[in-house]
Image (cartoon, rainbow, N blue to C red; front, top):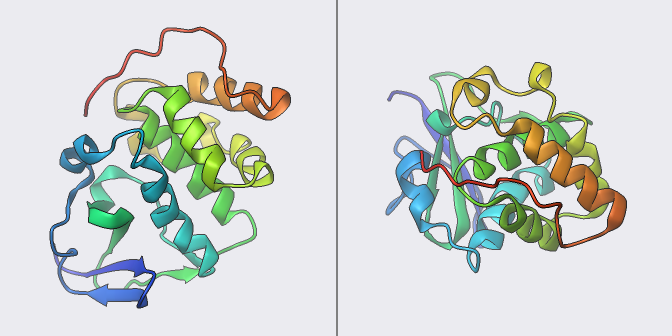
Length: 175
């Protein structure tokens, strides 16, 4: 893959390299690293983009590599680089991130850990972007079709401030 990889570390801030981070793996194979106890570190790794006011662009598994300590790296094709984040960009990216995680991790676990990292206002802003017309197309074609389940659970969590989501079939599908 030609292009650059961008990610954030607490000690160095934004890092740009020609190769993915050391010890990193593509999202599809790295998802097995994500456990309920470590999920908040991955949320913080993704959240670092917004805190730095940078947009990672489309949130799709093809562009993401995960590395230990919560590093979430994004691939940018040759000549591209992270842009300044738009006012709604953070919420759209967060919605895609939650839908992507929910494809491999139980919904309540995804939302419990997200609630520990993101303020409720950010989660509420993301809810508006869970509609299929606003999600990256590759997330919609990737099984399972979970956007509606996640949107309902997120709405319930925001409305009730509850950690307990309504009982639904939350079957986990590894990608």
